[in-house]
Length: 387
Length: 85
Image (cartoon, rainbow over all chains, first blue to last red; front, side, top):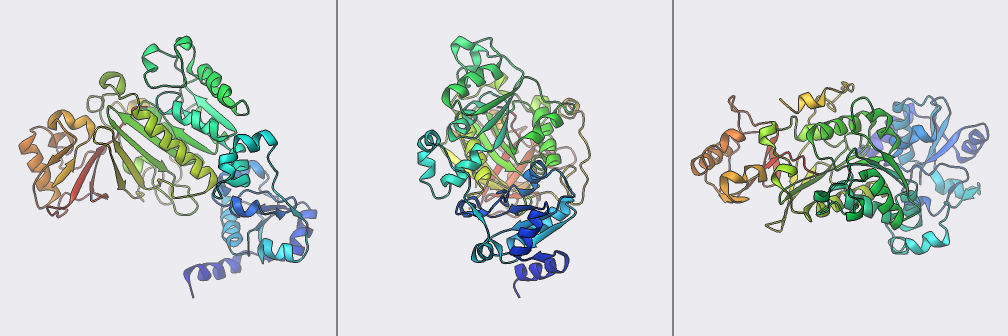
């Protein structure tokens, strides 16, 4: 017997299976159907009224979609196997009554039960995103998913600028932008969201002008503040994932810890002079936990060991390259396609014209994401990073 | 063998990639110290531990073992946490 069959057999001892007809009856009594298939499958149709949440972001999105943990849930997939795994995950999350639909959507359809096509795009959207729609990996369902996605950009600087532009162009529906700074003329060598005319304007306001000019349908939410332990829980959980383009270690460790706490992927980028690094930190990944930032770098360098770009300089185009790698990873994660940079650090040497891929593992004893650990709470990040 | 130096330590070596010899990671670091005095202490502390913001990779895979045997064709990459954005 294969491992996945053993697991399925074990799950069947704990998770009740229902027929499609029973699922329909449960739905009529108030249960919610959750389709955990890939966007491309859901685009071909799903059970009428089912929530097209997919598997990869299920744990991240379910609470917003189904806030009442007591509401019965019927998980459905293509044939009834993946929905067992998903039902198990939802039970572990705390949902009191989760069942799996045996036979999946194939049987639902074969039994002639009501089917709905995924909500479709308008003509303008179809034209704007036509090159995405041509890609089988994106298609209409994937584009719909991007339009429904929410990404938080930490920093509207060198990394955040190109990332925000391309995420807006790609149709990511909601972009949160956190920055407390104003545009300085010295930013313009690389921070392409901003312009000469907007020197002195808040970066959040400047970013909003640039992004809305590019794609007016994108909702830009400004957070004109510095992220702190006190405000981050009021901001980060409203987003599906975070693109970290911050320019200091205290913010990077805070963002990491909050991403671990809330189970959000942390799309990491960092630059210095001619060197850039990118990775995806995602301990809550349902298909195999990845490392967090602390698993790789448990502690930051001392201040004298870590001159920043304001002191040591950065090639203007470099954050462009790294920020776009972050945007690429973000879009892959939102669509659930490809191989994310989980457990891999991609290092770019602009002078050498070389990429180096380095692999690293999750630290099972990590103080924030280690095995069996409760989230330990936020710390004084300024102090942690000034030792 | 070829060793990738983190940018913040490039002031010691003058270049990102340098040649160093040794049959273990510890020996390679000792050779780097001979060539570029002062560089080792920026990576290894008084307790002979890897500094937590410096990470070592051999042929692309992370190692925590200074005794890790190496041969001349191995590639060593040393990476430092960067904060710039």
